[in-house]
Image (cartoon, rainbow, N blue to C red; front, side, top):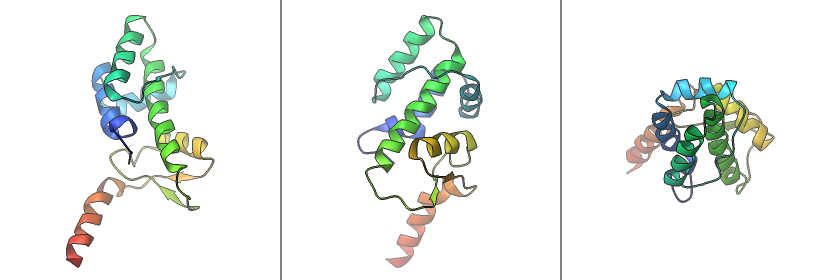
Length: 134
C-alpha cells in the first residue's frame, strides 16, 4: 500500500524489471547478488530515468536491481512506520511470496515479516468478504 503513487508497490517493481529486460522473479534473483545503488526518486517515472542513467553509466544490472528492491522496501517501511505495527506482519500483494523482499523489509522494520502463499489474493478476499456483508 502507498500514500501517493506507485513508488512503493509491485507496479514500480514491474516497470523497473521491464526496463532491465527481466521478469519480476529474475529482478529479485539479480538483486540478491548485487550491491545496492541508491535510487533516490520516489516517483516511478523519475526512478526509471535513474535506472536508465545507471545502465548508461555501465552499472551492474545486479546492483541496479538491488537498488530498485531496496527503494521499494524503504518506501514500504516508511509507510509502515507511520502506524503502530503488531508483532505479526504478513506481506500481501503480488510479491507476498518473495522471501528476499520479506527479509529485507524485516531488517528495515526491525520486526519479522512473513510471506504468505495466499497473500496475493488478500485484496480480492477482503472485497469478497465486504460484498458478502452488503
